Image (cartoon, rainbow, N blue to C red):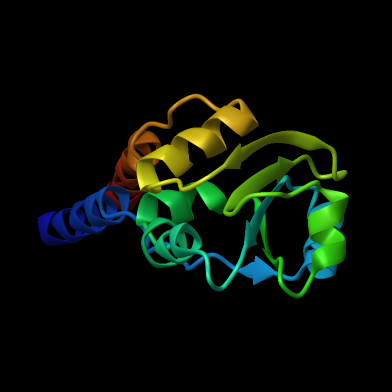
Length: 160
């Protein structure tokens, strides 16, 4: 019996402490992203870039793959706009410099924008600022008391 309790406790602690592996950000085209945001009722992060833009490349390689950024972007629909191919979208949003990141609500209304390079920490702050979020606590720990209570209840019922 004690072995069962020990194994259950170990499992619960390991799932509560070890964060889930973040899935890479799913990037949409403009039309797909606008539709997805409307259906899922999620805000939008729209990245305007050019292939020749060095700060854009740096963000693609260093900022967007950062686990902190990926975690924050999970609450958004992410759209990439290649300004060399989608001049119509670039003009619609009045983009003149690259990179430019535009934050929209689920209906497409602009919330904020940032012009220029953003490192991972700055991107996280921009996302939080645009969504009005407060800093999050460590993921997983908020479920630990509930999980412990469930194990204790199960042990109590098992022991009769």
